[in-house]
Length: 259
Image (cartoon, rainbow, N blue to C red; front, side):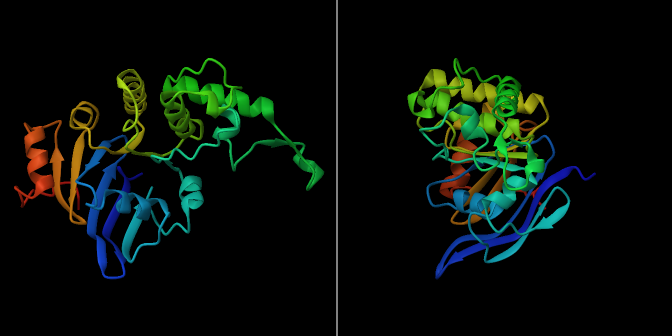
């Protein structure tokens, strides 16, 4: 089995004359946590949308878990083992926690009845509790609707969904942008738990302190291109260095490990 869980080569996305992403070469090792940083419009979210099949790339290749992939949509990516926590969370407010975790992939029983089958509520509740326990998420009552939960609880439910389905790669897009200090700490503890369990993760964030606390490597995007690959665990890079690459004050970073 390869040590590389995700690799992109020449990944490019054009919207007409707008070059939102250009020749992005990227690798992620199994169990590695990598942050993607950059100014607004630098190409971060565009990069994630190409990986997860939300949009179709202009050109380039994506290799996931050893196979070249071309996802037709997010469902294909999810079925392959990529779970994404978007800023919008994609939760149904009127449904409870198990219903949200299994939305679109409900467990059923009596499948031998052909088109007639029943939802396996007991199985979904059991798997939900296992997913919450795996990530350390504490929800007082999983039968409560999402609408009655705090922003932090909602974010934690979205993250727990990744653990419930044994994802091979978790992508989080600004998971704490709208959260308070206590809720942010809870989400960061979940990310640390995923690291301890050997889960691969891509974190899109503007939070410099958070990034230096949580990840192994920082990839900086500028004007649609990867401009820096910084191994922050084995070097003396600082937040000032990252800002310099984001703003363009520094150029010519090494690309060791990006391929």
